[in-house]
Image 1 (cartoon, rainbow, N blue to C red):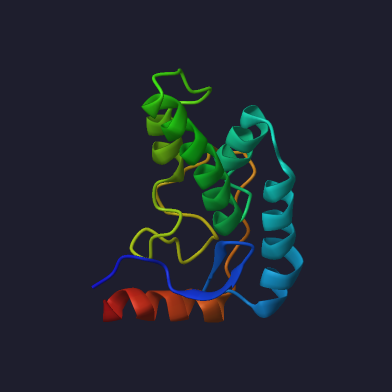
Image 2: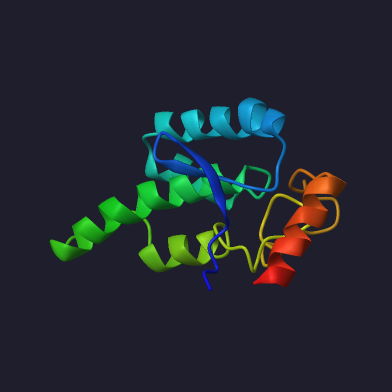
Length: 137
């Protein structure tokens, strides 16, 4: 069985995750993907990836936009501006059904401290659907 988060649509090359209302996709996820596509600086993409309040789909896109050029630079024996390993570690679980948090739009392995901004909360009906999908795996 696949560990991949079920994808309900694609937008600009990014998979849109299941278990969220259409209004969130329209008002939050799609604008976030557009925002990531407009970023050019490595530092801005990496900062976006690290911010757990951003939608997982857009964070995953930021990771892909960082890894591909970094791997190409490494293949040409040039130092990349960001470590591929650091990007992959920061993106771990973003597209995983297993690691999806049923309470928040983030992987359970992405933590935040007391008083820090938290990811958006997942509505109860979508949390229940996510738990059911995990149980069915």
